[in-house]
Image (cartoon, rainbow, N blue to C red; front, side):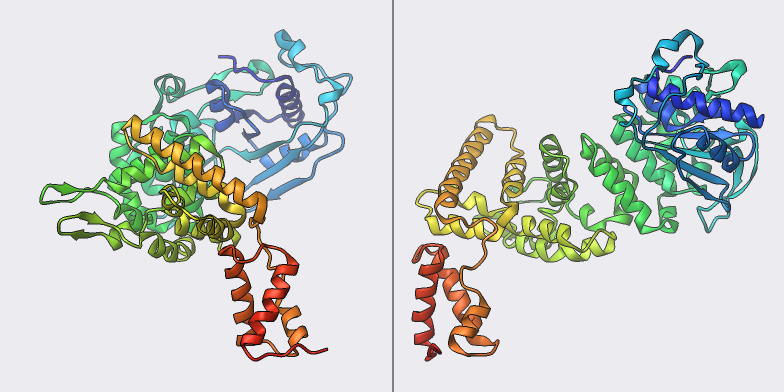
Length: 501
């Protein structure tokens, strides 16, 4: 079977093929590049397996490019990588795809636009110790190498050898699984997942990315081996979570993680969102599936990973704040405040960054109910100013989250909520145009206050700064230097402070 490569890709593959021929070793394209080409997904890297020294092949391939790319190699693992940032076609290059010669032509204008990563490894067979997912390796055949692959769709190989260039090697019917949209392992799934438990996360990630189903026996093996995830580092688990989060429909992955038993082990707080409880005929929605719908809604609007995390965590404290009030029903008072407090702990546990990204997620969780309160009648400009001030540069992200939080199946309610949020956006625009509160900086600084009144840092400086901020937010004074300066003088006077000449 022929896979459809671009001219640029064929250009690179020809160079790899000729380098392998010079070394007299067999080599094959294998794994994700082949899979994605068959599916029609974009590709930006390729894995090459050779029946010999992968590091030597990488160096030989690098020599065929001008300028010569650096070769990063790892002797312990027998792997090497090169990254092609730009290349130029040798005039005497003869394509090995003779019937596709026209596709191997590279226009000069395209020559510096390619960035492509290639990994080389010698074919190998693997065996595992139960306490580690790091295999013991030994040189092997192509068959051995395909046997060690995680899924049938990733075990596909294409020959780069002169005698059968372009021939597909598919021992596990990976093509059929692609056609059927199925994820399954080449060998016994229980053994595959016990050997390397990260493959359970990868199965769910691929099912989410490709929107495939996981074969029944494969999924059953994930459930049976879920506890084995404990030997995988948190960083690798979180990397897979982030990849799931960035899919078109993240809900697919989180639902599978839940049903497999993995989510309970890697993110138990999220599992607590499951279920709807009823008392006296009054119930609440299932907050787990509501959350999944919110993530999908956000995914339709933005690729921002951290806004998607905010969507996942926006109701994370509902289980902790759930109460039943007689005559009223279920309440979750303060879940936004408690949830915001939970964000740093969750980020720390998952080894997510504890920087401005975490702070942005925390802010959105804390504020996600505020725009709803602004949809009521008689909302003052002061309330709008405070939201603009507290949200700062994240106000647009907050509004996206609020709109994504509408998961009602009642089309009339959805339309009404969206109209209300549009009204809030308009109010914010009007206030922002006059008050300029987005990314607000105080017109009067603490340094100026200390200098003007000859006082050291301390309580009075904070009192004056807070009073100026509140006066601006309440609309008592405009957001400008002169008004703030005069207000500072009045406030200082009330504190018994005298300006120094």
